[in-house]
Image (tube, rainbow, N blue to C red):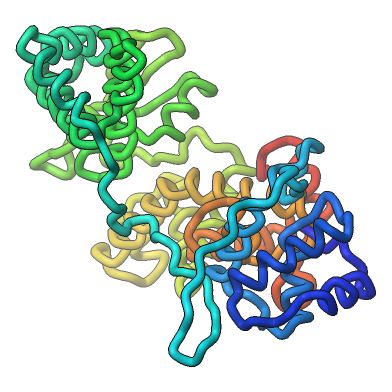
Length: 412
């Protein structure tokens, strides 16, 4: 996002606002004045510029979320489709609840945090009574039986247990009260869709857990989406092997459902044998960024592995013990496995900077929704490859080479 207001307009709007010291309340007042001034569309940087003119400091990442919440209360995304652009909804929102401090100043009431317990929802109990009667008639088994066709790999008992769990949750929350009041109770197909959505969400969450990934072969939503695009997926069959040097059996999937065949990968077989020179150069850069203290040595080990040298030969050439070389080879393999994730984040960061030039790290974190550590690695990689350049102390621009990568949607 970029600043759209001129310095004179920023000062003019700031002169009409009173400074309370509370960021949420001041953000609301600034938005009200910007909208009254007729400035549209607006960006978060516009609001931030006026707030800083009032006396607030440059907002941190957490404070940016407070400003963003205020913008979403007053505005909606701009129809132009550009990210970070907002237009007035047409009507002012309900005023923020406030509290009076001991010193007599007014501040915004604390917001309910994401993991904070919400107050119990009022319910008539109709949902609980309805589920109680329907379960006696076998509704839970009917829904679980429908789910069995959609999740053939899941045991029926687990599907039944999960169905009952959500029936209990919905009974407690009164989820179906409004439907029952209208005389339109949810049907078996509707309940099946609801529970299916909960199961799919659980499986995607399990895809982030290392043990579940190995034992069940589950994958994250992004990896499943990637398979639908590329037509390939690698699902580990023998997740836990007693002999680490034994060959690993994997299922290689094709585009058609059920089109799987087994392949064995030797423990010594290099994972990069199908990569071309450009891809290997990209892997070298990933290693240099991840292992800054030992990047040069690890890239030399990578070259030895590409040449097919044994660990004994590599140890002699590098003047290290075989055990040390084994550890370095494992680090190279780890970097190679992490490379697709790093490259995906780096491409998203590059696209975000391309859409919003002079973005700060905080802007990029808010746009890409990744941890600061991942953003730092991605930015370091992009700068090393000359795809972005830093302007000032905390803003970034895409280079000509970077724009080419954005257009091709690849860092190569």
